[in-house]
Image (tube, rainbow, N blue to C red; front, side, top):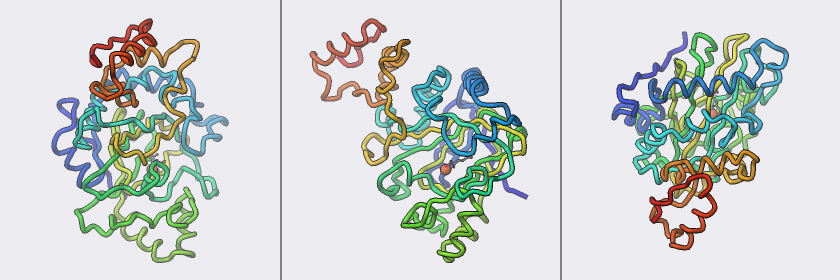
Amino acid sequence: MPRFAEPVLLSEAALGAAQIDQWRSEGFTLVDGLLPRDLLENAYDDAAEHYPDPGTPEAANFTSFGSYQRFVFPSQSNACNAITLHERLLNAVADLLDCSVLDIRLTQSDLWPKYGREPHATTQDNADQRIHCDYPNHTLTHPPPWDTPEAVEIIIFLNDYAEAEGGTAVVPRQGSDDSAYQWPITRTPGVAGLPYLNDRAAAESYLAEHAPETARFREYHLYAREVLTHYNFGTVLFYRHDTWHRGTPLKLGSRRLVLNMTFKKAASEWVNVLHPGWSWSMYRPSQFMEKLIARATAEQRTVLGFPAPGNAYWTPETIAAVEARYRPHGIDMAPYR
Ligand SMILES: O=C(O)CCC(=O)C(=O)O
Ligand SMILES: [Fe+2]
């Protein structure tokens, strides 16, 4: 029988000390009630309109991650954009990293589906993932020591568990001596010369043959200890670049929709933005990104890399110039004066 991690229903729409402590010590926390339900429903509707229904032939084409830009921030889904920059989400990230919202930066936001089906016998199949940490394709370096985290990763579930199953599995860290969490984090495909393989069976049989000690470590310390997130519609999983976890198979014939996001500390330049960058969406006929910038709060803009109030960039000349660019969209430059 799988073991489950249950979400905690927040009373205040903000993380409490227990959730912050859990993320900092165990490497994850799972919460309900953080984000407004209507916004999440709008995001679900936008995704359901775009992605094939489960059980259709088209669904069989989705065997990997990502939306191929469709829901990458800033997307045509206003709901996805609003969730990505939601005050409560930004505050939660800042609480976890113990910093100000002005010191966090968005580096990933996308919404993609998984479909419940028999795993394909390919090494990169995404259905039953090998256990891993996410840092290798987010940072050029290695996560800093455990007690000084530089990034928060987020999965927001847009289904109920009973509908799709396939809860993200996580390995709760048990204190600073935990064998599963010894440094450096290299016993995983794609790191330290090991080939990158996504599918669990393919990865573990490769390791059993070529790196048997690594295969045993993963079996006894990681897979044996994983717990499944028992999500509801709107559950938010906060985890880290150095948290062992993996995607697990969905119920056959189902579809699971999730928003995936990452925020980093501004100073961590080596943690990269995964997408083309936010300004690449300017110049669209609708000017939706120009409007988004003009209407955002100073905090939200800063999370996107716009200079924070007080930044040395701001002089009377630059304030006037930026105002000239965005004035028709109603920007208020007061925070920068
Ligand atoms: O889909 C999931 O539940 C987890 C996915 C994941 O860990 C990944 O794609 O890196
Ligand atoms: Fe992952």
